[in-house]
Length: 397
Image 1 (spheres, rainbow, N blue to C red):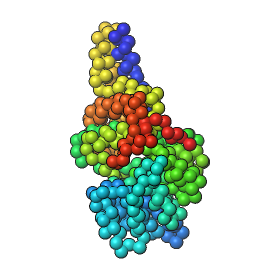
Image 2 (cartoon, rainbow, N blue to C red):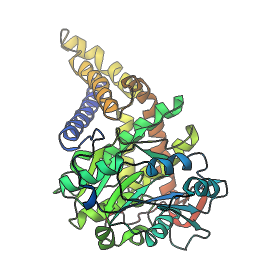
Image 3 (tube, rainbow, N blue to C red):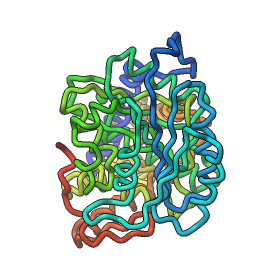
Image 4 (cartoon, rainbow, N blue to C red):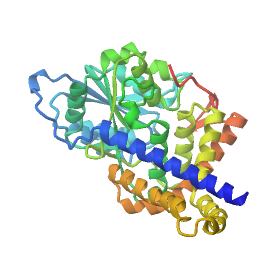
């Protein structure tokens, strides 16, 4: 009995990592990785791109973010910074950074409209003042490379899509960020395999709210942010609606085009990803339980326990080949993270930390399950949304 249990766990783990390898291969095939060259774009024919930056208490990051847009090599750029009820120096810093720039506007949001999340409301407010044919939405903790807009627009034209989004290079400054951020980002790639996002026949879709760019008529066709005002992952909702409308969605590997410092420290990382992952699963208990069990089964402690159960009987039955299954599984546990981290622009040795991060990923799923069971209210960026609970919110259109 113990032998078969150990064999089953090792087999499940091997199948999990084989699936991740398949997803990685599909990403290599279907997800472009621009180097930063904008290609041959005729300046007179380029449309105006409006970059909208929502900012809530972002005094540490807002200057660099704005400057990264103002220094783009793309010639027709409008910048709109939406200060969303900040209580720090975000507004003053944004004003000082934009001073003397005719193409840089500051909008101040003093009150949140009922029924809206703060970020959605800020982005919606910015769009009302935007003049661009294309709208780009950029998180305040993200910095663009000098040719990010030109490269993104070139991708949209080349692939004939209405929405392009980028995955970032993560700025990781301490142990916990290095241990946690890559595993949580990997989980998003499990929920939304990037190769399938770029398969226009597949229903899998998303946009990454750190940065995505959408043609304005497409934005209006899917209802803009008003259609996703109730979502904690409005970016995923926008991507799903754009693809369902047949407008074309493309995700590109943006490690050469942008970087972000998503959360600062241990607690903020866990809390932030609890919100994101539960919303990405649309708060469905069945999905949370599924991924809780899956990530538990592939954790290092469970692998070691399975090896302990499997090895004695396997050695007696197959003394010269008993090690093939556990060795194969262990090899996948090393090789797949190695290549995944390289694609993220991170040192491959961070793979050692993924096993630690996976334990906290299991913990986050347990917290998500508890919040769904209790119907907790969502807290996000200092705002408690009593009307927005850990309950299904029609993430799909």
